[in-house]
Image (cartoon, rainbow, N blue to C red; front, side, top):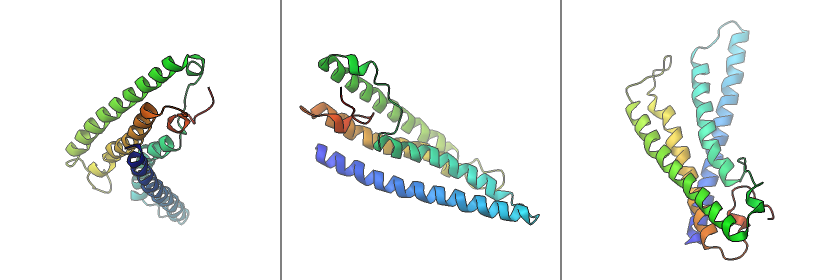
Length: 171
């Protein structure tokens, strides 16, 4: 089971990295185009709004990439000083709390996006659904990674560093 969860997590990671690449490239191109048009005295009104929307996506989708690459902040001071059984229990409890939080964000983030069909951007007049959809998608992607980390950590009997969110430093 852990093998399949790892494959799913790896596939999601590749997809989100490419997604993030497209977002960052888009913001870069939009910024260059915006500066060019502003320099010639004909500034664009729509590109700032579009860049803002894409930057929101970078934050939410990028959080999933950071989770998989174990780049989120971790506080290991207390965990490293615990006895092994208490440490394992604390980590599993923390993982389950994160999974529960991501489920809540996924559900309510989607509900928020769903009601945003009627809201339109002030300049582009595109439904805000597409902007708000980044939150539940980012949560879903992180949920895939957290499921892999949680199940792997729970089932691992020996070296569990591969499943630690903080990079798997020595205890």
